[in-house]
Image (tube, rainbow, N blue to C red; front, side, top):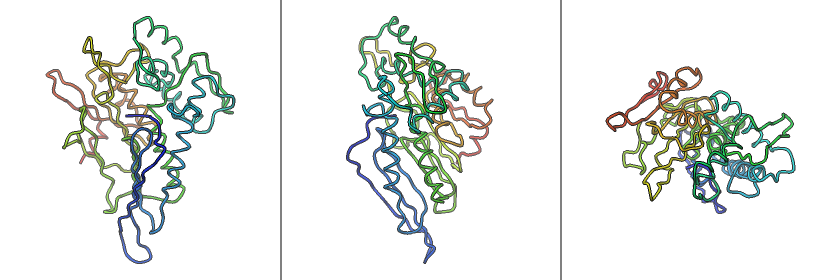
Length: 336
């Protein structure tokens, strides 16, 4: 449910909900539309007549032009094909620098150079082919976040064959860019959601923290879809899971998830079904959630417990096959 081609024709819904009276009347503006192979929904309180839809569209277009693997003219596509003849643009540069920092923090569980392996398994922009262990081992030789060198000027050193994949950070980053834009316009109350990744500031029309839900880790969206409801206040929420993006080998019946372990080159197989991470900014929450899925239940739990600026909520298969839940102490305080 991550990055795909932006639709060329955008259908936009803009809604206003009133709050207050007279000259100081505020409205809840809601902008919705397709984005990054999914959808976005942005709710923010503004005076009547204020609508930042066009600016938000422009932000989404600029990020697509930089980071979309499905846009052959994007910076990312040109970089991965070795065709980029200039320095990195600001979006790409920021994302790579932040990705390297999180890769270092998670001991490589998050690795943006996983692109060749993601493509090999059919979860990227290229079609899946027949896979064997020799292919995986060979492809792994061009994977490794330490191999990508980036200078502050935007110049870089990219070894032949190295390809980056931003699916585990780009939507979170997009949320943050939109949040920074609204902050610059002195919007103090908003809830931003892009492809399921969220960031909230201030309060809703009732003067309460924004209330959001985390989906159950099931293949289909259920009528009672939420695993847990929380109040999100000046924080971001991102969820990663293997329950909706996978493929099944017709001969063996083995299910292969889209979460790839950069150390082995194979899809992760663990009891962990979904990870939700709370952090100040959404790109960090997004990347850490993916890293925790790679780590597996026990290691991910220790990582969250030992990292001061994040909270976590895990759903995993118990020994009897039933869903079980682990949450950090700070996350539990946010539950409704």
